[in-house]
Image (tube, rainbow, N blue to C red; front, top):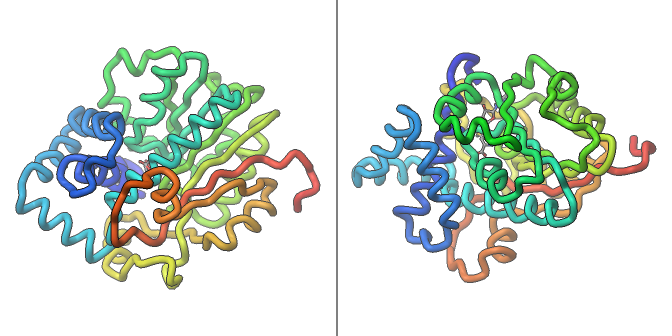
Length: 301
Ligand SMILES: C[S@@+](CC[C@H](N)C(=O)[O-])C[C@H]1O[C@@H](n2cnc3c(N)ncnc32)[C@H](O)[C@@H]1O
């Protein structure tokens, strides 16, 4: 991504959620808190307000929908599904004793903002590329920035390892049972940066640790319906896709890095599990969510 501009895809995710929750035929399935918090973060910045303005214009909505259909059909609702799954998994982790949640490449995701209010005894730390992190913090009120259990940190994972960044971060506690979230990010990192990230997560926490993330099926896979137009678009935006892994092989990739895959779900699987009343003919194919835990044994390689 560009080093001095906030990630455009981070804005796109929030816009997709607002589109799904306000204008799509599936809007009754979008959780209120997710919709309202996404609107809130977009309203709080000039670039975000431009995206909301686009949505309020029927002609622009038509063009946005057309663009989505040509590049990644079903993507806006996919954001809703993946965030619903991640929130569900994080809530389960907190219910089973997790005391620290670290959101990597947080973008304009509002999970830490929402849950830090509800769970005052859990620490939340958002880490993002400096340009995106700056825009997010500028957009949030002082009351939120100063919330005692919500912290922000700027790191470029292509320049600094997560482990190093965490070792200098006084808001991070390596002794707490933790969940790391990395949603819509790994596909922009090189294979070696992904390996370093997994290593950092595993080594940064002394005790139990869970890693919830999304991953992308290879572009040529029948499980991925992303088209050439999307690849050209991302290249033009300097956010080219770099890392892919099929859902069928993610378990073995994780095992080599000392993690056990507990669950993985694509859109159809998330919908059947968490939105049983959703009637939808076509789902996004490509990105899926994984919930993994650190293996205790050191003999994983
Ligand atoms: C598609 S957005 C996803 C945002 C958010 N996780 C969500 O799903 O709503 C990608 C995020 O990855 C972050 N990112 C991309 N490359 C990065 C890097 N090298 N270091 C740190 N963050 C990076 C961007 O700043 C952006 O917030």
